[in-house]
Structure formats: C-alpha cells, structure tokens
Image (cartoon, rainbow, N blue to C red; front, side):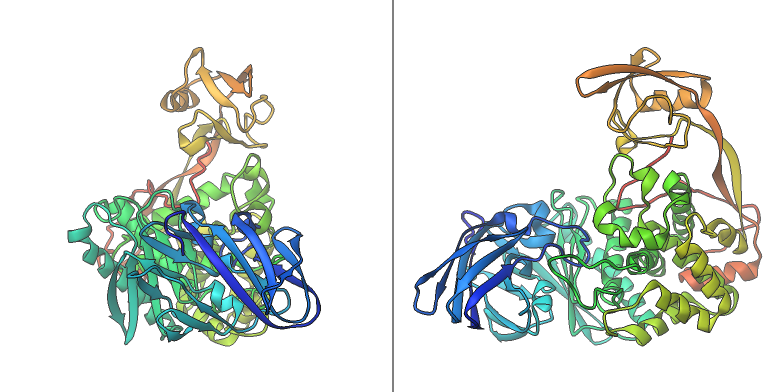
Length: 576
C-alpha cells in the first residue's frame, strides 16, 4: 500500500505456467453489483517477467485483460493501481493516507486457473489490520484463500479505525467504523444494540449462523454510496445523522438487516448460475427477485422484530411499494423473472426506464409479502418454508432457478405454487392489496389528478421520466427536459402540484439542451390508493403481533394508519 499517492503496488506470481499465451483478467463484475464495471481502468505500469527477471511480452487484451507470452514455469506480473475513488470503494477498495479497505477485484487472475491463492499484504508500519472470515491466516500479513472467488469476497481493513465486538449465540460480530459522526460517543452502542437485535432475529429464523465470524464495515462518508454483501462481511454507508436522527437510524438498521440476510440468501443460497461464476462474461440469474426481493422483505420484517420499525411503518411501506410500482407502465409489461435476467442492462434508473423495466428488488419484496400472507393464512410461514428451501438448495450445483423455488413451494402448498407462477412469470399480477385486506385492513381508493411525469428527486426542475400511457405521453415533453416556467411563472414543485390538482390545463416551458419549448398538458383523474384503515378482529391483530414481533400492535376498529412512509434505497419515483 502506498498511502501518500493513494495507490496499490501489486506483484503476482503464477506458478507452473505452460509455454505460450497466459491470459490474465480482472473481473468485469461481482455478485451484488450486477453490471459490467471498469475495474481495469486504474491499473498502470503493468509488466511481466520470468523467474530470472527477464521481461516478457505483455499487452492489453479485451475489456479488462492482458496477454503475456510465457516461456513456461514461473511468471511474475507487477503493476500499480490508483485507489482513491471512495465511490468505487465498495467494489474495488480504497487507499487513503491513514487507512485502507482492500478487495480482490484489484488482483489479476489467470483465466481458467482460479483455484487457491496466497496473499501477503504490505501494510505500512504500525497499521492495525482486520481481516474478515473466509481465509486462513498464515501470519499477521499473509492469508491463504481456498479460491479466487473467496479472495473477491473477503474485504481487509487496515490503518486507523474503531472496532467493537459483540456476540450472538456464541458467534463474534465485528463492527468496524472507518470514521465517526455526530453522536458517536453516546449513541453508537445503542445503534449496535439495534443491529444485534436484527442479528438475533436472523439466527432465530435460520437456526444458526453460516459463518465463523462476521464483520460490519461502516462509513459515514456521504460520497461512499456503499451497501454490498460478502459471505462473511458487508460494507455499508450510514447516513451522517443515522446515530441521532430516527429516520436515518431506521434506514441504517434496514441496510444492516438487508446485507446480513444476504449471508444466507445469495452468498450461500445462490440463484443459478451464480454457483459457478463467469467473472468475465457475466452470470445471468432468473431468480434475483428472490435473492434481492426476499432480502428486502426481510429487512423490514427483521427491523420490526428488532423494535426498530413500527407496524404502521411496515404496512405503509408495503402499500407504497405496490402503489409506486403499479403506477409505472412497465409494471404491466415486465415480469419479475425477466427483470432478473436483464439486470446487467437495467438495474439503474434512466430516461424511459419507467416504461420498460421494473426493479426486481421491489417486485420480489411484494411477492415475498404476498406469499407470506398466503402461507400464514394456512398456519404456515415464509420464515419456516424459506429456511427449508435454504437447507434443501444451499450449495447445490450452480444454484437454484425460479422454477425450482416454485416447485418446492408447490409441493408444500399447492396454492403457493400457483401464486408464484402467476406473480413471477406474468407482469402486473401482484395480489398485494388483496393480501393486505385479508389481514384485516381496508385499503381506501380515490381519484387523484396526475399529468404522468416523474421529477428528479421529486423536486425537479428536471423531468426524470414521462409515462408513455399518461396525460403527458403525447404532449411533447421528454425525459431530461428542465422545467423553466409553469403558466408563465418560475417553476416551483409545490406550485406545479397545486396546479395539477386544480387546473384544467397547464403550460410548461422547458429547456432541452440549448433549445426552449412550450407544451400544454391536461391533468387527468386516476384511481390511487389513498388510505389504510383497520377493520380487523383481535385474532387478526394477534396474528400480526406474532408475525412482526410487535406486542404494541393493538389497533382499534376504524383506526387510520399513515401511509406517508416509503423507504427505498434505490430512490423514489413519484408519478405526479
């Protein structure tokens, strides 16, 4: 590590290399980040030599590879890598003047030879070191990894950091803080209490931990954008006020629950073909709606059972995940399975995305909810049946498919298989509203006037998306337009919303590149879900108390529940 210039100096020895071309690669992607990344962008001064130090011919090959003309025997490759981009840190690590997080995506591998490997880390003198589980320590600086995949999955922290150890059911959990935030001295331990209640809840569901020990790596740096799972660890960005602000604390606990749940669901229970990764060309599962959607569902369930999320917030989120999803034209066009298969193309939001793709996190979460409600209506639960599915498929071949999960649940309960076939294979088939009402709620409906656009961060002035089925579809408005004036006056989002609710027609002046255009849109009334009211029995309330682990859920007949909360890490797209 070179803390001054924020770089790595890497030397790799390949042994037993046959004469001829040696093809080296960096991975083009990693599980949890389903998109082709420029991991090779930061490498420079790449060179190769034989065992005697004689230079070997080396040149770039393809997206992120190199070709070495080997003479046989030992090949040594050396290079440097820039490692100062914090936003790239969860994928490739960082090196700062006082600390570092190292990840295997910085290390070239020999194509076709991704077996065991040994890494010796050159830490600066006096730097502390924390290595996540998944490797055998040889000494304080040297670790043996059973495979290159294991190396990719094992973050190493060095330098200045705080670490707090907690235990649950005999297993140690390391909480590594790379930096601090307001309230750190007085509120940190209370936050960790909440995280450990989530840990206990996950253990209660699966019956054991699948790791020797586990590491949470936290940063409060708002530039990091971290949130990535590993088999025995996770890297997480916490909000700057997450120790003192109730909303940010709730978000922080949810992301901890989400990434921890991945230790079972995706890190070990793998959707096919993630059980046999193609580091260069990508691996395309049809069941990411399970890997991410079920995990998102349980971030809310475990958060509730940890006393961090109230039942009102839980049901507000369930209803709003459905409301916001169903408002998108893509909901009626794209299935959960297809969304999973296309993840390398459409995981992020972009102009037109609201019309042609859905987030498999969101769809999968609602499928999990619908399935859980159905199972509980028959005395079962998703907790127990998903644990059974985990035990049946963990470590099995290349992984499980959507069809495997549907068949498994169908064998246990025919109606569950039918629900999965409908909601996974077909678009627009979620039964979420009916499931909420079956619990004892009344979902109120009303007419809401809309023009069918989505504003950037809900405030504008830029239009993120235009619904191709909405009132603005043929107006001329386009994603990327910047609204300058509304009815001749300066743009303000509250003013536009008021006009949508009251005006027959609205004139929008927009800037598109260097051109200005004026369009007229006419709001139209559309049905929306507007309220949530308790109409259930005490028996139904008792069942929800057991399900969510909240003894305080004791609603009275006619009690109204707020539906103002919608917590989505991938951003909120409000159709106005």
